[in-house]
Length: 475
Image 1 (cartoon, one colour):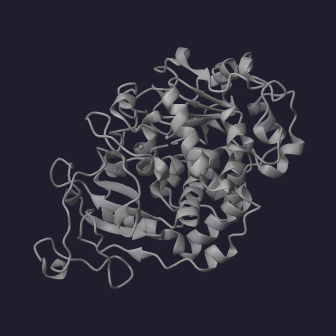
Image 2: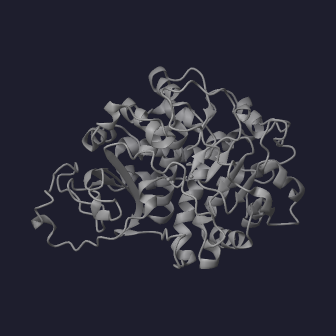
Image 3: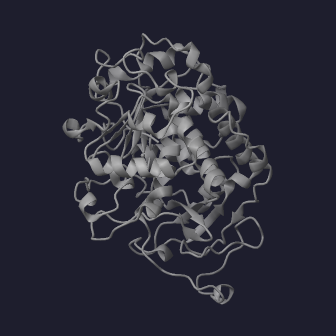
């Protein structure tokens, strides 16, 4: 699955936010984020900002701790001349309130400089293998310089061979990145864990699937590749793959550490304490929900299953792709992951908007039935409702603009939003293979029967294996 956040909003309380305009901020132990793949798990209940609310149903497994299976013994700071070289490792690996570092000991980068360079960021990077640092630097140097400002609310970047999914921890103020986004050679792959994302399979009992991808000119904009073969990738293949991940995780960072509140931070506190000291309603996602909250209780219920592993009820197992499509199309989320909690809602809006702004790539989202065969090929997934560039929807675009204005206040994006093209809706009854077939009615519900190929005769579609990440969230 695009990571996981280590603290989040309990889903029952998340619904109360929508209904009651949220009178109190209740954060609980959560793994997204992803993250926050955009979004990880907390290392202990004592480290959460607030107690965990009672679950609505018995989950299929214990809350996931992404640190439980990670061997961090081999991570080391990239820059041994960094001013914080002696504290970086203990601070990012702290697992209890007694060990969490204060902002005086390891400050967020924005407390030290108003303008960050790639060198400034690399001075806060720890890796398990040198190739990770090499590729990370090269990609950072290739990105728009405006992206560096998003690192200001961060204490460190950790890249370790065992991290999956990527996530942000408020206890340490660091992001933890899966090196699966960075490999280019077979030798690189041999150092990376092959473990599956713990969330894989959560949605299997349901009668629908959601798929997503970034495209340009009807082609994927990056190469997922495989950790289990001899294929290689270029830096060009992974540039936008890592960019997507960074935009998502850094959205979480700047949600909790708003740029205009740095002067209010008590540096004697750890990051958790400093965030809490800003007061209720201080996060950008709080403000987003005061502006325009999501409203679909159906999708919030299903998010408990899809992203947290709650066992679905019999009624939930019977919910069709058509039911889900109606609920989603009538709300203003950019992605189904938004219904997991308000933080992922914000991060998905920000990620899609900035990918479009910086690189003019479109986010595709589709709701399909369950695969007709084993789900290996793109033509196994028949679309009930799908959309490209949902940012062009007025309601979704307004929420995205609220987020980007708050997280990147020095970037004037008015013309960008004013000139966004309208969403294009996928033809119901077509499949997930590229090139995409769009509806001529604009609603996506004009349907073509699978046995009727007349409307598809001028389009040559390639029935190829579906990238596994299309079915999940990498953060």
